[in-house]
Image 1 (cartoon, rainbow, N blue to C red):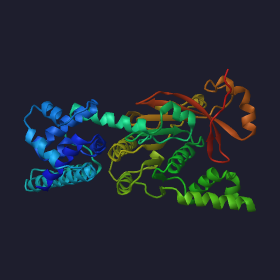
Image 2 (cartoon, helix red, strand yellow):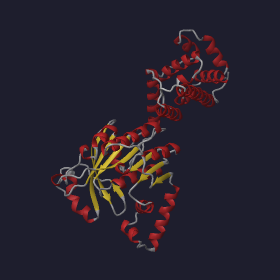
Image 3 (cartoon, helix red, strand yellow):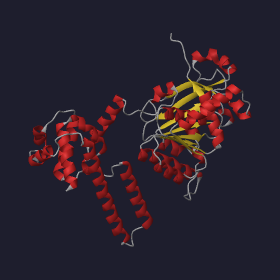
Image 4 (cartoon, rainbow, N blue to C red):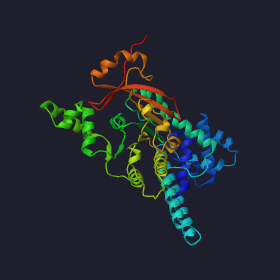
Length: 432
């Protein structure tokens, strides 16, 4: 059988050449149709995770000596490891074909049973097909598989093959480490505090790093958002762009900025308001980062009884999307209107509109706060002396508070918001 020939050849490659072990990230033991070869692969996974050297003799001993002939056939089937990647791809393809056939058979049986809910059955099949497309395992994962996948992930991070998305704000990246696949980060702020610019800066920084970025903005025209990008990239005063008051030098800068924007690996949406349409569009595209601005403007086609249920449905859908597509999702959020006595205070997670669900679903929550004066307790003592000078330069002091971070530290990072040029600046402080 074609299945078994590729499976034999891959096991032979893995035994003879450690360089072929890198192809193991794309397949699992369940992708093997031959039980003996499946057992061999599980043992190889364990030994690779433990960084133990092995050959056919050691592998034979580790598997109890019951598959000696199979291992000999595997080595004979792979005189070279050059084609290990092709063998792995063939095994994966045949595995997907078997699983799709099994799904089709199960669906056929269910459609003949009138007690089965048709819509629920179709939804289950659609989800199973989506899982196959992105490589999600629907079966139990052994401790060996978990150890192997964890080690491979850490090795990719250590070697630089895998990099988190950086925000472009150095102090923030040092605190949280960046934005990682599968994580939903909610950024909350009052209007005018710069949350849209923050999302744009993260998206621009990721796109300049070669990431494929998708940005959904539901409160601006495309030209308005593009103007902000030109201001950031070209360092052109945003008010000059708004008024159309350009000089010849400005035009050259604007043209250069637009040329840079045109070359970015980024796509934008300004009219898609339903979460179902957004999910379909993301699944149809190949993106590495999604920015949603902002979550309260997103709608759903489902009929729900309250605003709280709507936000709950959307936030969970975004979290599922992050996990399914293995990308970071950054969603901007409104804050509740504060009481008069609390209008100048640092917001908390409770100030997020419909905060209960956002708190639960988000892996990270970043809150933006603009102190009213240098006497605010969140202003660094060393920064108080520069407060007036920064104000005169048109720079606004913003405290970025990491309120929640499932995988890292929390804390507050002060930055300067340059609203004239739609950018954030780090604060340099002398050492004592």
